[in-house]
Image 1 (tube, rainbow, N blue to C red):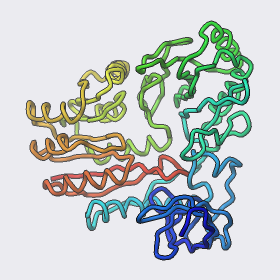
Image 2: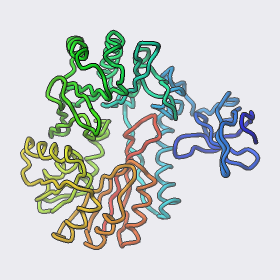
Image 3: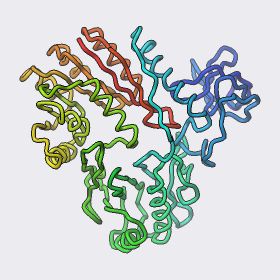
Image 4: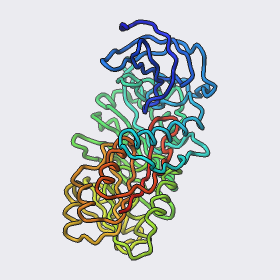
Length: 435
């Protein structure tokens, strides 16, 4: 096999990232946008010791599961990976990814993985997007990068995004038009994020990088006249937020609770599936009103406040001081005064908290993709915490961490996958463990 060589492959599987898997001369070859059961002609783009990659040139025999992607940017935009696979088969694929991660990576056998919760309408679900700025001559363009590149693969002024909420699509188009009109003001701007608060409809525009602040005033005046944007924030170096218009935050409503979040706050991007996800956390928690609970990696306090309505006490742990401040505000505005928050890394704060107080009935873990650090996991076993709920956005690190906890005496009762990100390879899961 050589770089640039044209090869014909039978695709037999999908890898965890949704790429087709075939073999050529005994070597595994990954082919994006190819599906199991297909015969494809592809051109080799990368060769490693144990695998190669190839760019598909023609689908010689298509799978019956293949559908026509509704977006003309599919393949040139990095936002979606599975838009060519019908939705029911996307869900089956994601269930298999979770099962394979637990059995192969975690060496966990006989774990009950529930059928994934899909969406009735898996379109226009995203309440947040980060758009990149590029230049076409002396005019800025706004869009999403192509896969594994820093080149715009989807322009928001030319096509709507089928994953993005319609309100944000309209805001993106207006923003792109006004940025081209006021082009000189945006030299030095690198990205623009748009956020929508479910339940209130409040929207936020976040400008990243440098620009001409004097000319931004006229731009913001025209933007707020043309759209219903609630606030505009500039993020400066070292993640400092500067409010240019409005309050500098927006407030979302979710299942009877209100959550204030800022430009840099984490908040789940899919309102419908977040409600399902948190309902499963509450079901696993099975609170009677007497429990003492810890919520590690709590962000602005979403899960902590859901639990607090049925717990005696909740302690949240979060490394971001801005998120801790907002979590405290959120607890107060929801009238939940038996919730407190500690600023610090979970691997440092959790062991100290459990050693000092110990008598917690439940710990919830909701880490980033990297998973939970060993020190935090070890502290659960040392304190003999009776029950753990693990919310994960990465099946591989979930499998690794569940394997560790299993070796420390915990039993994984079940895992519930949730399709938080339809048409992409990303998967959310909730796992319930007890001693």
